[in-house]
Amino acid sequence: MRRAVATETSQYKEVRGLVRGLAVLRALNGLAGGIGSVLDVARATGIHRTTAKRLLETLKAEGLVDHRDGGGTYALTFEVRRLAEGYVGSGWIDSVAAPAMRAHLRSLSWPSDLATPDGVDMVVRESTHRQSMLSQHRATIGVRIPMLVSSLGRAWLAHCADEAREATLAMLRARDDADGALARDTRRVDRLLAETRRRGYALNAGEWLSESDVTAIACPILDGAHAIAAVNLVFVRDVVALREIRARHVPLLRALARQISDGIAAAPAER
Image (tube, rainbow, N blue to C red; front, top):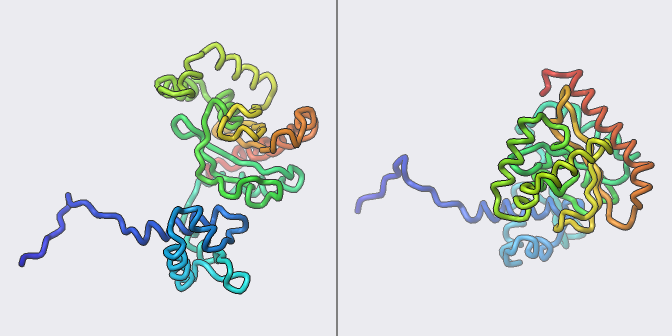
């Protein structure tokens, strides 16, 4: 019997065990402190608890997770971080933005995200959610955030280069959904962006329906005259009044955004 020979055009099937193992790691990463029980992981992944237990024990044997609470829970280990040591991100995010965000966390208290544009969304590239005691989310890196209903998107759109703004809005207008309908309301979009520029910061007070319990403000990160990113501050709605946000938190966020922008200008080779 002849053995099948793989060719360049043959399709590889995914390794299901690897896919599930990565899902378990992502689930633990999303839990508070990177710690959870077998049931927590099973619920987060949709994997049967017996399989989740077997995967966790396999990851433990590889040194990627370890037992806590006498074996009742599992936690990510330093080996997970070691796997990421080969990753090279945008230089200014790693060398300028991340240290500044961590340094400002004590005064800001509430968590912040830094995001850059990617198509019709903003993508979170750095965050202090895991370090902030006031965060409602633990894993936001890589999350895609809608452009027109978020403070991050509004801050970037209001201050980016004209050609980048028009290209983004053109893509949004072509969509057959609520985002597309909003983008096609050009007068409303123009008013929204003009108000953001006049105010000096962007505001989202529940307009993002999937995060309707959130109020967020954002400031642009500038490279020269134009925004290349935005940084926000996220609050639980009705916990902090808008007047307090304007009086106390806006100046602090502006200071953070200015520090990052100045750091980019001072280290052009890092971009």
